[in-house]
Image (cartoon, rainbow, N blue to C red; front, top):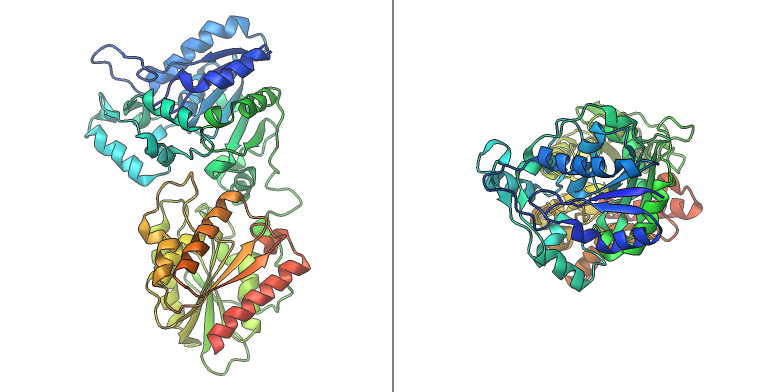
Length: 509
């Protein structure tokens, strides 16, 4: 049987693994939970500076203590922050480690501190302030969250109340050096097989990883490798507390090399964002100006209304082609132009969840550029958002300008996903909709949407109905996220036609 070494995340100690370790041990596995210096109730000698290298050494010590009995090699499991010392140790003991399991954690990179993996900008800034300017946080620590603050570090969905109480009671301050000291890798660890266990209740999924790899994100493209596998667990960020049995079963399967493999990015089947638009549309040429493309009706004799299509994201900065050239967006723009209005696509700077302010500024600039175009009626413009651009709708609903005749959104993400951190009230459509007044809103909803995205949509609709906002919902019951690309059915085509008719009706009336 496998030998498992379990490395816990921030503020925590070996106790979080108790139930999962017991289930693994019952199958005959050899299980060791690492106590990281300064965490789990340990107290280092006074004056000791604890950094990431300290925790790498802690993991190395456990590897060295068990490798004599681990004939088939060690399975090293890192949860959350714990993946950083785990990968650092594996890089130095590749001959002993058979597999690394990333349990709802990121992909540590050489030279990058663990703090970079914290999604919430506010928490990152808090950590830097707590360091007080010291060299990599020497001697400083970050206090553990209160009971209701754990969700800022990852979804606590399905964690029993008693387990959350215990997690809080046994939490330790996190030495800041462990977050600020860059990870150092030789590169040897790249040869070790890996498995990602993604917790869907925390906003992660295999489909999302595949989509990001398809978009050309370099660190994720490397995961389309036969040595890399994936599993999903339908729970929050703490599966060892919420689903210990399911986690143990998954770890055993992962240790045997089972799991889903990503499709290579050069596969014969193009990725979803590059598949043909589901409707036959005329080949209307584009007029390019900076980051904006206009598809102008050839028959228009005077300025025409415009529909600006705003792509989702985050999209890696190096993605090629850029979103304004994706068939889905150009298809919508040409479809609009075929109906006598100017269709517009654009590129904006939503490359990470920290970029919403930049993306909002880019979209606002693009809209003003479109309104100033001589072929556009500046008083009749509609905005149509997709997927991860959903939070950008808040600016326009909160203060709708008189020329904005309609706002539409397809399968939008209307609030931060659990692993995004906080975006701030500016990007909260559920709060902004109360100020939308009579602005017509069109929401195209995919019936087979992921549960976490669906929850953001339902929360938005609840808020919209409570304030009497004018929302018309177009349902695609058997449609997935980006149904126009992945579900080219008659029902999907009908939904696109219906949504376009509604938007055009508000533009031309």
